[in-house]
Length: 424
Image (cartoon, rainbow, N blue to C red; front, side, top):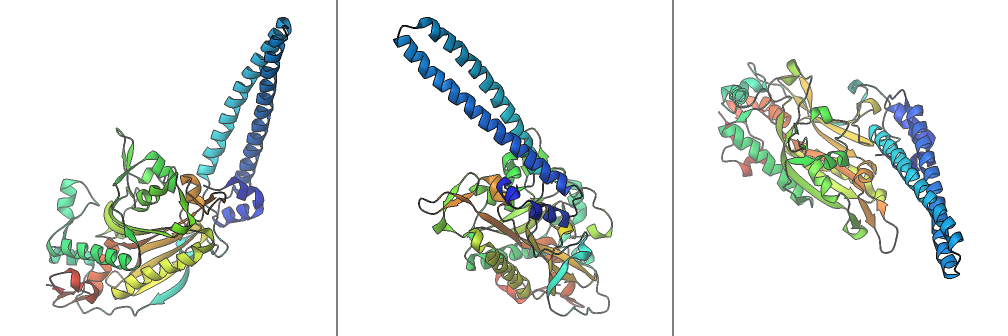
């Protein structure tokens, strides 16, 4: 959620940032925020004046009673009652204005940082790094969904029977390979100083609002209505919410957490060839890294997180590229996002496997997550996270790129986590 003071201090920057996101009503949104904030301040000032007058009268009533001036005291009591009624009306008015302002702020996305490129679609994203030669597959190579079936690694049909489309069942070496990737990613995060968290897989509404999934992605989340809980779309949500309503010390920064969880996404409206196999699922596994950082250091931290993910993909031997997302393709909460894509040789396409983002104070303002040094006034922290990594498309690319006529070769980085080096 945007900070009102920042909007007031940088009105034109806020409007320009929203326009970079291709929001046609940018000026109207910002003007509405300013108008509601003005109404809030006016109502607050008036209520404070009325309360001050009421307190002043209360003191005078006591003095008049001491002096035996009962009639005058009764007149003052009537005035005090009028002020109390007026203060109640003002209190209701103020609450209404604050609710409107809060609702409006919840609907406005984050302001992109200056380096975010302009653009409307993924085609406008900027490739900032690439590594690795595109694999040349043997004659007869097939896409990963055929490999999964051939080697009995994943059963999509039984997943449909048990739950529905998009809920695959991993079996045998497929399950072992999936677990090996999880353990590899967690081990690498531990080496980088991240503390592992095993969070709940469902969160309440306050947690959804805290990290910005609500109200923006409400239709994409599985909602358990009877308990009013949401299945998590990513470990980012529960892990970041560990620090909701917290004031952390400056000395504790950066806070570095990592968590492996299943992730649940409705993916409403997804269809066609892009959802074949492991390309797009309703349930999938992901390892997520999260950092809470001082605002002065958050962009340095973002680069370090990008390097961490770069190291993972490099060790797996996958060709990849990094994209700086344009304003029109950025997530609702992000100020700057880098996407990682690996090349899927049999499909001959790039597959997104990670987003690494700095949210600046956007999530922290919703979460009331602040840091404090000594006697200084608490300040909003910056939050960052990244997929390190999401498994389905990584697995798809590994299977396709490492296949040969005799089977599928396992990258050396995964050998310590498996009892086999080839699937055949």
